[in-house]
Amino acid sequence: MLMMSLPGAGSPGPPAQPGLPAENPADGIAPLQVPPATGSRSAGVLNTLLITAAAVVVVLVGFFLFAALGSEAFILCGVLALIPLGICLLGLFWIDRWEPEPRAALLFAFLWGAGVSVAITLALGTMVNEVLMTLLPLTPADVVATVVQAPLVEEAAKGLGVLILVFARRSHFDGPLDGIVYAGMVGAGFAFTENILYFSAALFETGGVGLQLGFVFVLRGLFSPFAHVLFTAAVGVALGLAAKKPGNLRILVAFAAGLAAAVVGHMFWNGGMALVYDDFFLFYFLLQVPLFVLALAGVAYLRRAEQRLTRERLGEYAAAGWFTAGEVDMLATGTGRRQALQWAGAFGARPAMRSFIREATNLALTRQQLVAGREPRSNLARERRILDELVRTRGRLLQQAGAAHR
Image 1: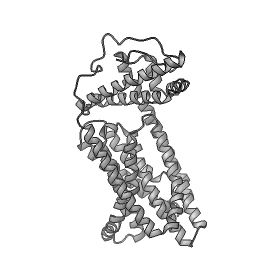
Image 2: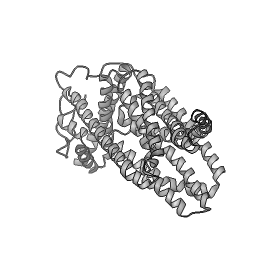
Image 3: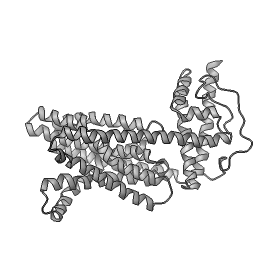
Image 4: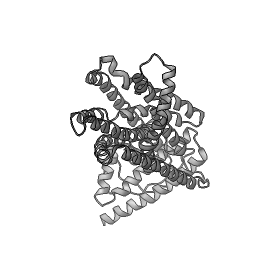
């Protein structure tokens, strides 16, 4: 049990006096004696294989673009594409701050978007377009390619990467916010490679750097860097909602529903300018800006919901004596975390405090999975491991605090 208190949210300072565990722990909170999970090593091997395979595809796509565009265009357009990518990553890391996802999973998501989904799109795009032209003979070819084929193929290719993550990293797929982060990384990776292609097309159209390249960069890189992130996020939200409860069939149904929403959104984006007579800026400010604001509001709501969930589950551990009420405030509120990090930073223990916060958040989400009935045996083992980690991290924190106050 955690036997000593760290500073609460409202009282940063030295640790409080030792506390005692509750006399009657809440049912199910005291960890059961279960054997360690046997799948952790195989899961690590699977993660390594997935990342390696995705990285190989990224390299192959990079060589293909380098050969097709030439070294100067490839480097220039690649550098320009880093700017909207950086904007997307900053936004996604902000969303991911409360409960950061494993960096390996995020790396796979980005590599899938930047390489595998692009390769699938290049391989299948022409074939799917020919089929659609046969099915829609009266529709102009450019409309079929832009408004129908591109959304179908691109969103399916991107969404498949998010679906793989649900099954490969199920224990870290806790809800729609996680889905947004993973899907957003896939979308950001795809947009990065696609932007290289669009910027190079503008570069070659005018024979060099000029107004055309600048115009395309502003439209794609500054006005709409989150377009692909938002499309694919629909898949992430659907899968995140489905992953909160056990069962694979609901995952597949959610994937189909999320993919349909992503495709419709992409079609709306590509074909929407026709609604306002090809005036991009009117389309952007009247339709896309409100949708983006709505997406931000949705993310803010999901972040608050995750904070409430953290407080609720950690409160159950507090009732069993694992935490004090002050520690729950510290760990389950943004203000409490900032104050705790400030306190720990005074004696060089910020890394340990960050670990303590991260472990407590993972503990709360693991408890939520147990409540939902997801993989009880592996989650009970995971709960035991996290509690052991918390004990060690707390000991390190208190040791550093004691040394600083002597």
